[in-house]
Image 1 (cartoon, rainbow, N blue to C red):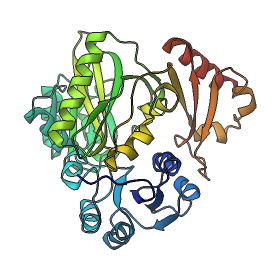
Image 2: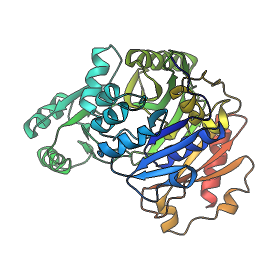
Image 3: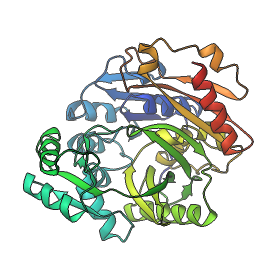
Image 4: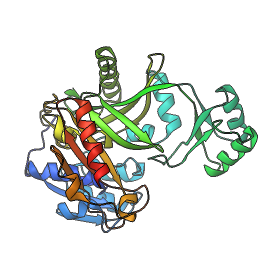
Length: 380
């Protein structure tokens, strides 16, 4: 397979913070960058050669982007399949439309994982209100219900059976909140930890699996993450093996993040897949020889993949718009802590729950890195 060498042009579908950081890594390697995003002030606009303002379903704009590129990748999985196919007529699109079509729909994604023998928690596909009622009963009365399409950072998700409300009323409300559209009901699990694993695969079939990251969520949004995850070697090896197998089964070209649950009884279960750079691997910029963003560029350009060995433990904590709205942005005080760096995304309008940036910290151990980065956030 042809290698796309520095000096070529990479197109990125999506200009959010992930596209911005991927573009910055690509520019360091000597590539030109074109981006497509519906937001005229998207974070990537300020670091790329050209930004096309267009929606995720604009096939003409996607084709125009690809015309000027040697390869096209993505930083958000909500791109329409038609747009991916339109771009693919003019340049390789990595990852491709066939993989995205499965991952974009949670029902398809779960069923694909089951068909291919990967471990998942008990779930039910739901297409109607009465099916949701039957699913909740089959799953033991406590479950998470997630829209089949769209939704991230806790959006388009509803919990059932965790409060004192009548179950039938909860189910009806959940079905309404999710727009009476297809969804996945997942059994509530007794969790010990949540981890993620990032795998990169080139068109030539070279695979590199990053060390696992430990993740902590608040209100279904990632609060902080640390690399390497303080888990047993057996769990880390099993997660890496599953990640590599998923990448090979998909014939992945690019990056894939796999979110895992570790249950209290020791099971390792796949939660969700994300075919792009991932929030939980921002710490790879500090922790690993090669960051996830440089690795994404290497993978889609079919360059030799970089070393993913941990150089030093590193942690990140997300900075949400709530901090700006409340006036808690004393960045100088946060930066006074040894080993702490600030990463802002140049988003113009803070909103509650919106990711505006993150803090990162290194430490002698994962625990020290987490302690430092959380103290830095506290000082804001």
